Length: 160
Image (cartoon, rainbow, N blue to C red; front, side, top):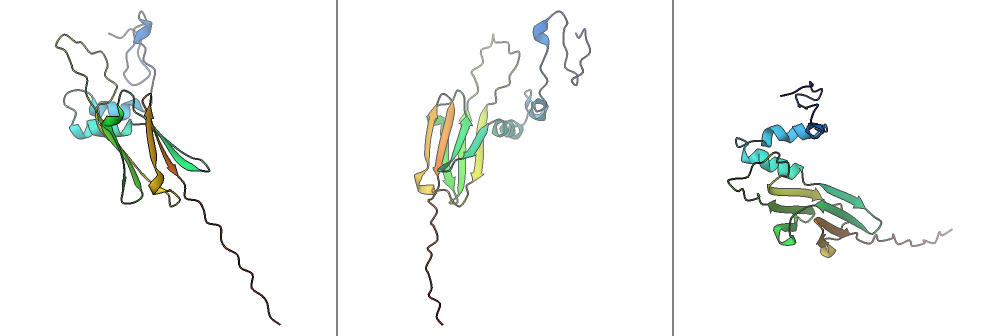
């Protein structure tokens, strides 16, 4: 029962329990309604897993580097593929933790299920030299760039 009305859309707090206060996250409600509870559809849970797979993509002078947060996954549970010549696809599946009949869950925020992220690589990507490594739950994919060919300049004699 709430002793103080919440200003964050119905979240309740108890003045006597400092740990009952939730920190407001503007992105939490996007998927939490759709994927909470046993009535959530499989497609809603999968959409949440896809959206919650965090990826950073940076470009250096030598390569495109992707860092993907995949905590708790082993490299055998993740696939990195190139489709249609230039589409980098990262996919896998995060298994649900086995529930014991005496367990009482208070909050479930870690997504489970299949995930997939796709990125169209630019023309300067060297598709034959892609490397991937996984360490401490972070998948790093390095896509080297093709060396730019400098235009050949040929002097033409002007007659006259």
